Amino acid sequence: MISVDIRIHINTLLKLMKNSTLILTLFTGATALAQQNEVEIKIQDTLFFNECNTDTYQFIDYYKKTRFDPNDTIDLTQLYNWDFYNSFFNTGDFDVSRLPCSMKGQYGVIKHIMRITDEKNNNHTIVIAMIENNVSAAYITEGAFLNDELIYAPKK
Image (cartoon, rainbow, N blue to C red; front, side, top):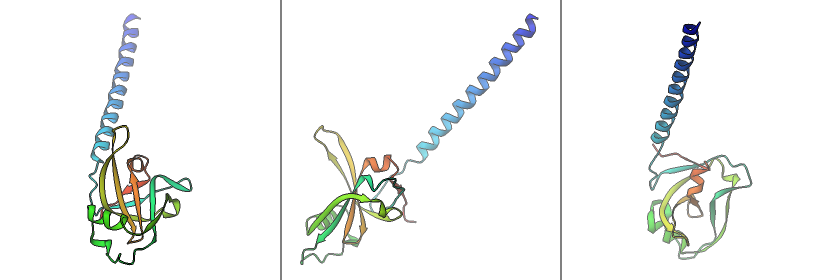
């Protein structure tokens, strides 16, 4: 009777060890998969505005030009980095609001990426994407990426 009892405990212990190994393997596999999904976002890449469950996106601002400077005849299509930023934001007037959910399913082209420092000396990455050429841009904070408001959709 003692030998049967020991076998049951050994078999139970082996099952627990197998299950623990399986869980550990699944966890390790999920971690490796998450690491493989990290991407480097670059200028000229495309972003897709994902699902939106409220009236507006929470981490994306919408800059829409309301007045164009008469001397502003620059085509922003081929401008990137600070050339784009200065040409777009230094001329005309803007309405600024959160990006409306009506933009769901639209694409934006990354025109500028910058790092800013807040009042607490924390660094934040900001991405500026052109939505409508020469008319509107999305000012995207890190939270948009972390909360799945965007999907990285590089051109192929």
